[in-house]
Image (cartoon, rainbow, N blue to C red; front, side, top):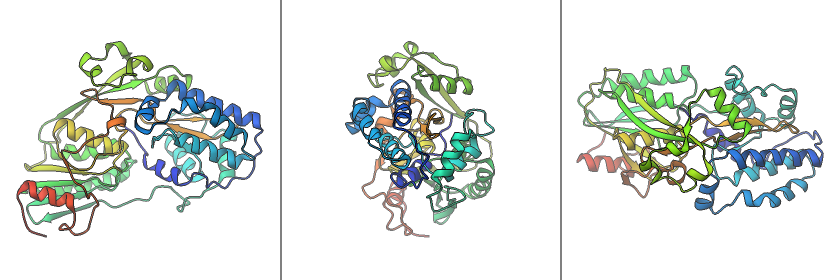
Length: 398
């Protein structure tokens, strides 16, 4: 499965309280209806309510009356959208937020209109809402700013290096980067090590990193995880059904997985499926050296899925700091609020690693932790790269 567009959450967070809407004049009762609908979807379908309590000390459901009062006190649509955005931010999940910018709405509409997963994206009320909100992001055409992949030797003919600033979404962009990366991999036959740097990468499309793995492995590699669902709310049920997912009863979750899983798993979740990912080798790689993955706390979503895969399979040794989480699982859902036309994006499932650990709660811990993980132009000043050279017993510069 894939989790796409996680970097959208960063932009949305920056826009909290900054929307510039024309007043469509929702009544107080309409605002309350929309909030109660949102609350019900989260109460019945959101996977990380208990995790949020443990990690952030936020009991979101218990704040219902407080949130309701804030909604009642909004004087116009702009304040309502700002409050809804702020209330959702209390869930502390990068995949869960209001879409409160027209350019971001247009971006999602372009991606999903032909998929059939969401049938409301061109509803008149939704279109009018986002026309009234307008665009507040710097890029009026797209909220995504493309960043170039970097490939080079950090130690000539010994240590290769790839910097992957993001996991591109569409096939054309992925193909473009894979040509650059593939050509570079072909030069690594006699190299001792390869560094893959995903520091600062907040995700995109799993297909991006899977294509890189294919080019580096000589045999197929399989990893296993578990996707847990609260298959109770109509919004969630319709989404899962459209995706054609095949679930099992939560009681069939393996005992060894349950031993490490959060205590709420058997109480709050009712279905799961085993997520078994096999990446086939394309049989072209001649690289035989060690692979290192550099990570930081920005690594999230699809980039996090890559970190999980590397840690579980031993494909790469992780160096840096604990990651950001919410990798694995199903692409986040979109649903609309009937009165306002506002669209909400929400993470859909709890992903457990093969040994039952909740990724959103515990993230991925590197094999070697580094205090200063900042990426720097000089390899002498980059502590993560220096850790690789230390492990490889290599000294020198480009």
